[in-house]
Image 1 (cartoon, rainbow, N blue to C red):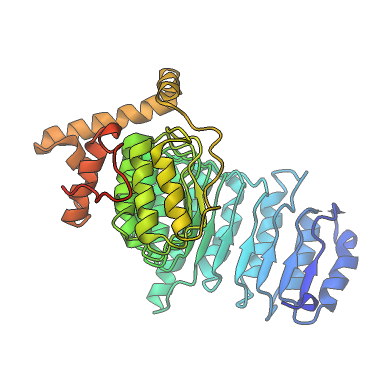
Image 2: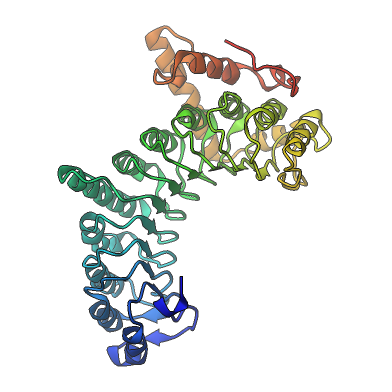
Length: 424
């Protein structure tokens, strides 16, 4: 895009309290004929300056990108809602807008409400970036419900959702907001990219998100890094994987997958349901050689374009056969540089020591996994493994996942690139 259509004062460290403070830059903005992008981050705007900006933007016919990340540094939390409301109300009147970036603004939950009219009524924008805003559970619910309402209004008018990208990481969304996000994702079935890393989401929340996103067949990027999966969350994502045939990037690093969770995922990988995968990040998942061997097989058989693979921090020696199998598979596709450094791999003794010092939240998560599986199994007269997989997958896939997830890690430690996955 020609720079003549872009207005940027990004990173100048300017402080705009009043309209007069901002006026010289308003004049520059107005001088950009047919402006398509504005980048204002790294400066700080007060209420009056935001109102002046809003007045200048209102009714634009050409603006596509509003990059308003990091524009409230040093502002009182009481100022931000009014300032944000002025901006969002102006953007609501711009049908050409494609992307809104409000990341790195310390809103807190109370500043979610001013975004609601825009999120609900501007139904042609496609990219929403709300990273590191401190939304919390309530703020996250507010945003998600506004997006759901937008989808309902579009549907009532016979129009498809335009939303394609949602980035909402580092917001303390937790389990409490996950059902609302799941409903929003399901309503916006054309989503292509979803990133919700570092949100304190645990198994119930992961399960809800995976089910919601199962209704998004065009999903290409899914990033839930640094949330807590354990076996239950891993299985939920594993069940959703066949719903995403266009998946290019999957980031589940630092998600505490554990051996059974790793096996649940990798057993689906070797079914070839995500043949377009290019980036797979599974670092610090605490899974072992059984999972890594299956990943090697998936690479060999189905992932010729895998260019980034992160496995560091899992349970295997860098000289183990499973790692050699991974390297050989990558080399076979000319992707020998895809694998990350394996300088922090764990051995079984390291894992046992960590488990002895397990964080209380992790211990609680695993206990909930176990207790719920046992209770459901007792009620239905089935094994806990069969119950935890539910009834939504095709029988063959479900049977294979049960077999893998119920097996101990060493049962698959001998799998090599030439072996076929064990059928149920």
